[in-house]
Image (cartoon, rainbow, N blue to C red; front, side, top):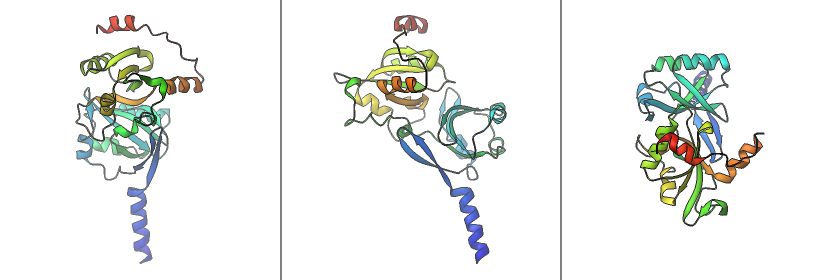
Length: 234
């Protein structure tokens, strides 16, 4: 009986133990699902620009050599997410056994829209400084491996008003209404939905504070939108 209980504990530890994804929008559990992650799960990951998008979390943060090995197999780690997780893009041709060959990988997960929304972007919490009549001033951050120009064009095509572009930082400043903001926040959307290429939607003032807290120079409006607009042929 003791051996059976011990075996059940080991199985639970290997497949059921979870870490917490600690984001501005809240804390979310990430189950260690690598042992049960299937070819179907891999195929079901969302695709944008022929790239699979996911959150990968690890038993420990990979070092630079391990990151290079991952990259060599088609796994590109992007922004770090506490704890021990990364936004990641995967080559669509990658094989499941290649992913599972990395013992440090604990789980692979779809990127849920609720991960991306700043907590102040709720109807009862809108800060005064982001309101312009019935419009909201926000900034979106996009995946660094995706085409900034194509995403900008797509946003315009979908009716979003771009007020400023900072290509070097992958920031797109938008003026939108609540209905448009909701499109970034729905629990489930189809693969071609707008939210896929966005890593974070946040209030503009918080972004400036964040940049200052990171030890960088304080934000100044140096982006000449007309020049950027001409470059992108909008």
